Amino acid sequence: MILSPAELQWVTERMKIYDIKYQESYFEILDHVLTAIETKRDKGDARDISVVFQDVVDTDFGGYSGIEALAVKQENIFNKYVGGAFKTIFRGYLNWGVLAFTIVASGLAYTLPNNKVIHSVFFIAIFLLAFSPLMYAFVLISRKVTSVKGKKSLLKGRLISQTYLPGMLLNGIIYLPVLFQGGDDTNGFKMMQHWPLPALMVILIFFAVLNLSSITLCNQVLKKRG
Image 1: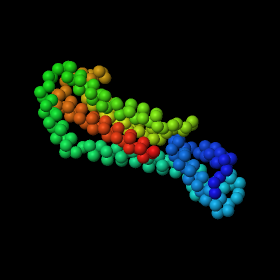
Image 2: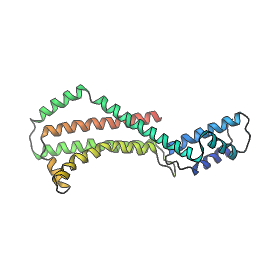
Image 3: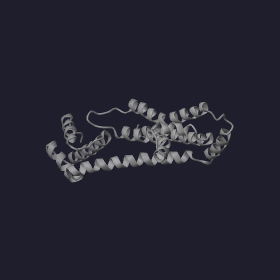
Image 4: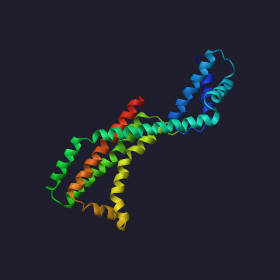
């Protein structure tokens, strides 16, 4: 039995008392609650919507704490899905073809002029590969995900976090040697300018794979979301 507009509005407003941070979890749990209420009405339960709502929450969802625990569970499931999907995509790109290409490209890097210009070109390319997935995700999500007032987007937050991973790794590659050897932050860039070109080629290809994996993940997750 379909609820009346007034009843739908009441349930929607009532659900806001629960501490559900993310809009995706909020709408999914709201849908479950509405379905359970409609099922009771189909069975002849004509009590006031407030009574039926509380009965459903207590019986089917374990009360206030049960609703919030379900929200956390859904968040964990989504985070696990995104993390697992990224690992699968990343492993798919790490094949023998990529390994062979990396070996050949690293060998060819020996033939390049070992000067500051070439090092700068490598660094700029690595930087773009590391941070462009974050920008790609931000633009794509901004176009396709509508935010709800008072709620965060789990999808947006998780994808932004995941696509920032290459940038975090690049920061680690640049600055970790500084922590062991001492010096200010600029030393990380200075040290990178003296890295062998074959090593920079390997790093470049690695970040190219991370880049492709991150962008593929964004497209896959948003396509599944519909």
